[in-house]
Amino acid sequence: MASSSVQRVVVYGGCGSLGTVLVSHFRSHGWWVCSIDLAINEEADENVIVDAKLDWCAQEALVADKVRDKLGEEKLVAILNVAGQISCGLFTRVIFEYIQH
Image 1: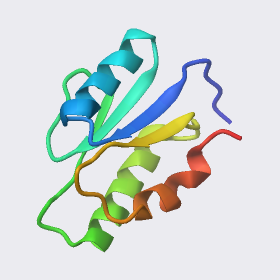
Image 2 (image 1 turned 120 degrees about the vertical axis):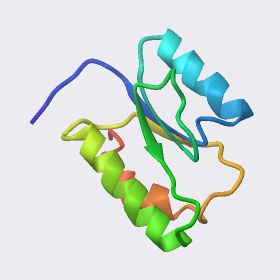
Image 3 (image 1 turned 180 degrees about the vertical axis):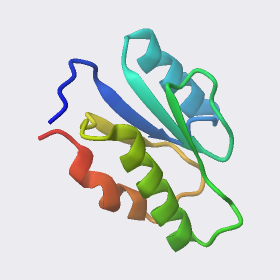
């Protein structure tokens, strides 16, 4: 199992007003940050782009798969949802297994 001392966080809505501030804040403190949004956040370590043409269930599956691929065996410290439109928390439920206990 991979082990890393780097703290990891996902910011869902990482290109919005609050999301960009959160990405910047965590990056400035040495955290690995994955931004999930409709556009790329250049400051994030990784980005998952949501396809707005897909229905919410398809978006959930796509985002969860891409986040799993980017994390590998690493775990998250937090998932922060600051998106203006989120699919009723489904994403959080799907990748909850990646949060450290």
